[in-house]
Image 1 (spheres, one colour):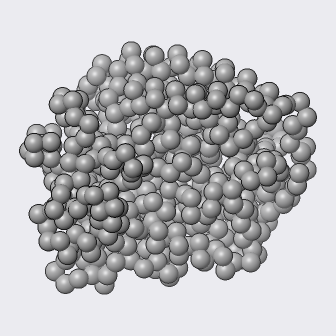
Image 2 (cartoon, rainbow, N blue to C red):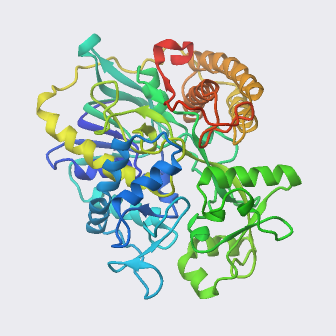
Image 3 (spheres, one colour):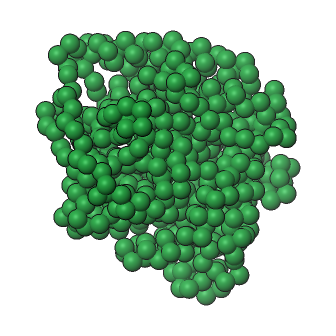
Length: 535
């Protein structure tokens, strides 16, 4: 086993992690870790784009107001304004890094040479994008830039086990992490003056999700075990339109289709969104997802439909080439046919509590992007604000780390990972069964619509699974599947406890027992030492 030493350890290779790496000084020794290849992060799969005020008819205040409205009163104004006001500069930085955004066609809605589209909750066209494959364009450009940096050492197929922290009381500090190699099975020590969690969200805790397989809440679970507070984990965003097809695992149908006039239809072809919200298909995601869920259950339908076929075929193919190609591969021509869709778990609005520099409760530890809770998203993330958060807070964190680098000493040595008292697992079926059970009861009991009884059932099942998983983890050699399951059961408990604590319906949290919003508006903050599941 090996001990690695760096100035900064970045766990995660999506937009957040890459942004931090590229904005740190060239003199800084950086370790950049990815659970798969560098492209394995959720960013790669992002279709829609980035929200930013780029048009002269738009305004910062309008973007701020739209974000607050979508967030149902729970957004923190300081985080919203920081994000929005730094948006244009973040876009300029991305263009400098080589991101090739879609250009403006005369009369097609755009500004400054770039096409802007509109998505749910936005009152203006402010979504800059690269056709419907914005994530690929961003990831490709930023990874290319990282590969040119001599100071960034890249480690692929590595999964973090737990954070390392030294000292006690006011001297307590994060000094690294134990990192498991998926390829070799070794678990190494990575020491650093600063550690950045950029591990993405936790949507794999649900049976149906638009996220890649790596989205298992690793950073949130590790920070919780290390003593960091988490907030608003009850607000899990379900994207309204995931492609419904047996051969289309986790394929998202971009919200920009609705922004460009796409209509949601019942199986008989009737539009229905106006019955739920005057904004129709352009209502915020929580409203649209809940409406689709309601109609599917009312009708006993397996899916509903999204139709853009009334727009010219050339327009559809030009603006949505990824969706067009994927659907055509499955026998669906979206220039003529409606797209079968269902809601799926998409984005974790809560996370590890941070300040406006990305600092967590544990000195030396930062959380950026979907792993974090900055206060930006409130009770419901507005479309395309999430990528912007990665760039704005990623740059803020790198500036803060650089400013304090010289004041932090090299971390002390720690013991190697000890596997001398464990054996090789001979019943991996236990992991597979627990994984499946966890995701199924989270979907059934802690999904788009919740009740006290459903949450109580889920809480009971989590307690049982926690004991089984803890016993397995204590006695057998670790694997990627076991580590992810260990983290997911922590995430499940945090979501359930947060949902049980919120006695109202607000944003993404809809309770049949409490259908109205409460007068008092407050975050749900969980503190590790108050819960037995903290370890």
